[in-house]
Image 1 (cartoon, rainbow, N blue to C red):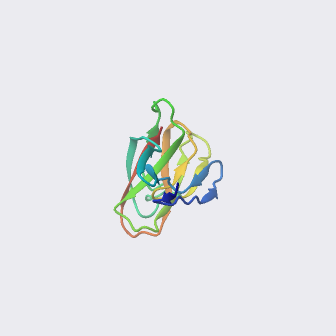
Image 2 (tube, rainbow, N blue to C red):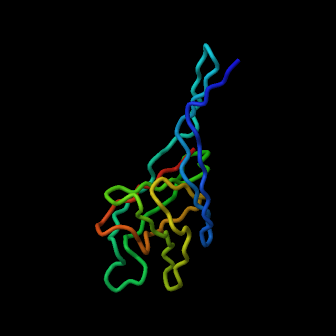
Length: 146
């Protein structure tokens, strides 16, 4: 029996300040043995948040370029979050910070690019910070992978 590889998977890991970021995985992997073919679903995606970000920090802010967004009430079995950027260059990246009232806002994930996946952390007060690689406003959609 010959196996034919229909696609390849590449992983890129970047260490964040308090989380990890890695390149997105494909939504389906096809394998084939001569005379047969099967498809294995690798993940389900459910959009859980969307936020618009400026291309630079908001006026009077050091880092913040968006309003807050919430990552809560995730689907059962959620094992990662996926960030998708719309309306910006492919090289656009940013940090995600947590809004701490009366305290210092920690960076949760660093150097997030479109398609990157992260570990799962929940809170109602995340925001986009320090975007780079774009000159225009953009939208970030967050998906739960489960």
